[in-house]
Length: 243
Image 1 (tube, rainbow, N blue to C red):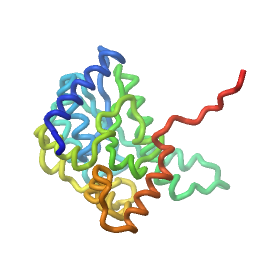
Image 2 (cartoon, rainbow, N blue to C red):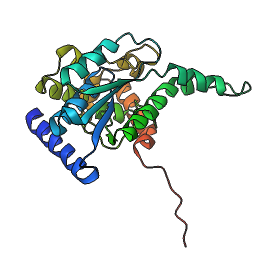
Image 3 (cartoon, rainbow, N blue to C red):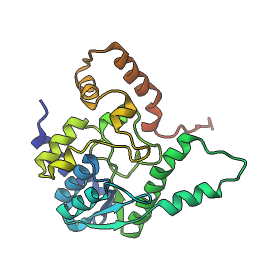
């Protein structure tokens, strides 16, 4: 019973309230991948603030096969954008690591999203911005994000909405159909999100919202991913001295 119109209007008002309290003259800045999440987040910011106060950052790592989707989105919304190719930064950091230290596969995989977020913040701090996080509830539920990469930001309009709900908002906002329904690919190892996760977002969304799931093995996998990735959504533990 998702009321897309009500949620969209409430989210737009929430974004306006955030900027009123945290930078009335600031711009919303976000990475643009060309997928549904960054497209919907950008569209919400445009409705809340106006196109002149939303800035997209496109960050290919060398050649990006689907960068045309990112360009289509910024042109559709009429927002200012910058293209920053992060390949030299990624390769430079890898080359700077001492020869006796072998970076793990996971470290190498997570390096581009962390450099992308550093890039978004560099742009944001140069244009009087506030960084918009683009993660959704389904991804966050199973830890499908990179800590200090795409998992961070200054405000997050989609973190309590499932993939299906984000798509509904995308269609309501009049975004191009192919961007809203684009098969999500991690952009890191060439696999789809669902290939990496081992289950579909439809199954995950249903489980999140209703608690219903048909396959016990999938339920166990989702529960385990949710449990071991909770730390990504929490503040860093801080020692409190008894003074």
